[in-house]
Amino acid sequence: MRVTNTREFRTKRVREARDEAKKEIADYKASKEDEFKKFEAEHSRGNQQAEEEASKDAEKEIKVIREAGSKGQAGVVKNLLSAVFDVQPVAPAKE
Image 1 (cartoon, rainbow, N blue to C red):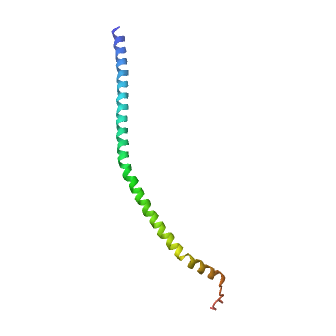
Image 2 (cartoon, rainbow, N blue to C red):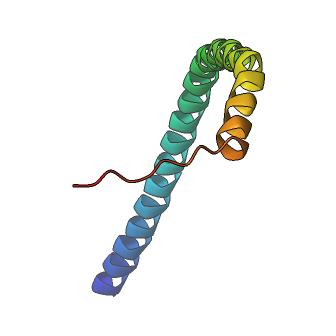
Image 3 (tube, rainbow, N blue to C red):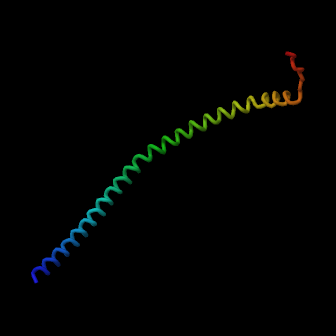
């Protein structure tokens, strides 16, 4: 009878230890997730500000490029049309 009682006690204790370990793991995981969320919230604000500044700079550059393109657009179209319509054939040189 003693052996049976001892085995039952050991089995019960192993189960309790496993349950305690699972609970500790779950608590540790929850605390680390909370720490990560707090860290992420603190640092994402800085990223958003940097993204906004980069977006503003990119918009300025795009505006400058579009303005430069629109200023020279008429000249480029004129040069292309004259190259297509004002063809001046040249005879090949003899070698």
